[in-house]
Image (cartoon, rainbow over all chains, first blue to last red; front, side):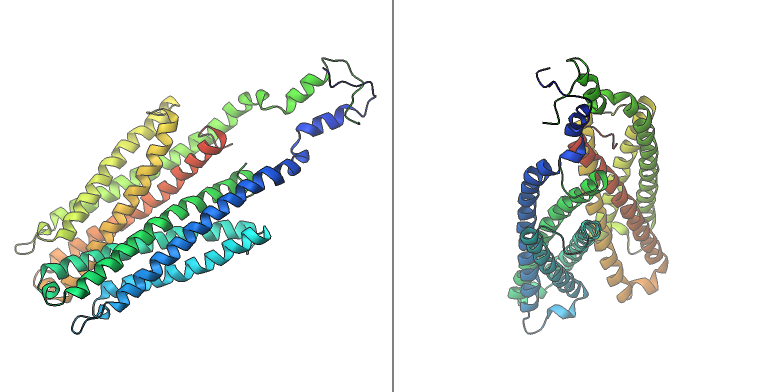
Length: 196
Length: 196
C-alpha cells in the first residue's frame, strides 16, 4: 500500500513490469552469471583431471613394453591405448572451450550446439573409457592367471597402473557428463544454460 | 517515478497476483499432469524392454551349455549372467513402481528419494551392463580365435546372441537413465518432478 503514489493512468503498467521477466536481465546477469562462472570453473577442473588421467593411462600402457609381451600384441590393450588417447584429445579441446567460455562469457559454438555437443561426447566417451577399462582388466586378469606375469612382472604392474588410471579418468568423465547433462536440461527448461 | 499509480490501495494487488506463481496450480494440475502421465508411460515401455532384453540375455547364456565348455567355466560369462540377472530384477521392480505411479499418481518412495533412486540405479546398472557386455565380447572373441568354436559351434553362437541381447538391454537402460536424469534436474530446479 505504501507503494501507491498520487499519479495517473500510465502508472500500473510499470508495476507489472517489475514482476515481469522483462525487467530481470540485470538481476540475472549479476547473480546468475557469477553462479555460472563458478560452475564453469568447476567443470574446468574436471576437464583438467580427465585430461591428466587419460593421457597418463595411455602413456603408461605404451611405456609398458618388456622384451617378449608388448602392449600392441593384445587387442584389449590396443583398445585401452586408443580410448585413452581419444579421451585425452577431447579433454584438451574441452579445456580450451571452457577457458574460452570463462574469459569471454560466450561459448565456442552457438549455445544450443555447445551444450548438446558437450553432453553427448561426455556420455559416449565415458562409456568408451569404461568399456576399454573392463576389457583391459579382463585381459590383465587372464595374463596373471597364466605364466606371463611371473616371467615379466614389470609389464603386468605397468599395465595394471595404466588400467587404474583409465578407470580414474572414467570416474572424472562420468561426473563431468552429469554436470553437462545438468546444463542441457537447464537449456531445455529455461532456454539458456543459466540455471537460475 | 512512473511506478507511482493513481489507484487506491487494494487495486494493484490483484494485478500483481495475476503474474504471481500463486495463481497457477490449477493450470499446473491439468496440463502438466497429462504431460507427466505420457512421460511415465514412455518410461514404462523402456522398463519393460530393459526387463525383456536382460532376462533373455541371462537365459540365453545359461542355456548355452554344450558338453565341454560351459558358461560357468569362464569368469567373463559368469559376470554377464550376474549383471543381466541383476538388471532384470531391478527392471521388474521399476516396472511395478512405474505402474504404481501411473495408477495412483504418487511415487512409491517419497518423491525426492524416488527420483534420485531411479537415476542413480539407472546410471550404475547401465555402466554395469556395458562393462559385462564388453568383457563377455572380449572372451567370445578369444574363444573364436582359438579352436573352441569350431568344435562346439552352438555354444559360441548362443553366447554371441546372449551378448547382443545384453547390449540391447544396455542401450534401453541408457535411454531410461537419460529420462530419469531429466526428472532429477526438473526436481532440482522446480522442486517437483513436473517438468512444466
